[in-house]
Image 1: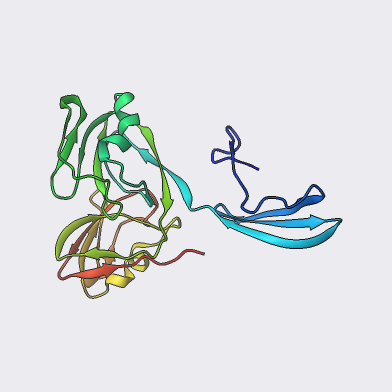
Image 2: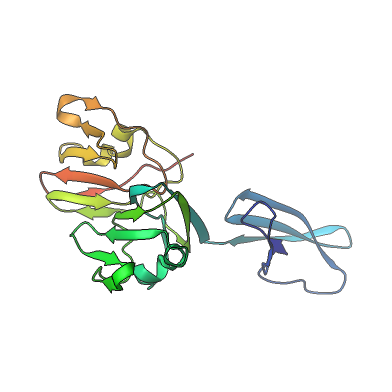
Amino acid sequence: MLRTEDGGQSWEDFQIPDPLDGESDEIKCISFPTPWRGYAGLYKARELRGVYVWTDTRQTVSLRLVEGWNMASINVAPGERAVNDIMMSLVRADALTLMKDHSGNFYNPEREFNNIPSPWSVKQGYLIKVNRDINLTVQGERIEADTPIELTDGWQMVSYYPRDQFEVPQALESLDGSLILAKDDHGRFYRPSHNFNNMPAMREGRGYMLKMENEAELMYPQGE
């Protein structure tokens, strides 16, 4: 089989587990109910012999970065890759100006300086400054939307795992009673104690600042 992740512009080989058993076997009725799960019916002499199911957990996420500062995150696990390795496409395009983590560590490609700990932490968001609008593509193992994120008291910059968009109160419902304030990279905020929110729905690829009054576990809702 062949697969594509860019609408058919490019294709790559994709091996179905348990290949055909004999020359008379045929694979028919191939179905993809989700981008990462597939079904194939195996027939012999027009009779169904079995249904094979495979799951591909590899995913690609594309972050749309706009000129200036962006608070970004990824919902795939890129393995043990360092921050400067993942950002290499932006460096080669001479687009990355500066990058920071939530502890103030930074990566300055112009001065070839980086003290952001490796590997890339999928649980946290990062501040990325670019000199023009550009996309950053990262490939890794898909992270389930409801994978817990441990939070401490005070401020932290966190990832957003779901593929679906959720309104802020719904997305952060698991922090009820512990969340003081949530902010995006435009200064818009959600204050649950005052029932006030002017943030748009939380979405894939963005990072968010959360201020907690105690330790808690963030668990985003599952999508449809």
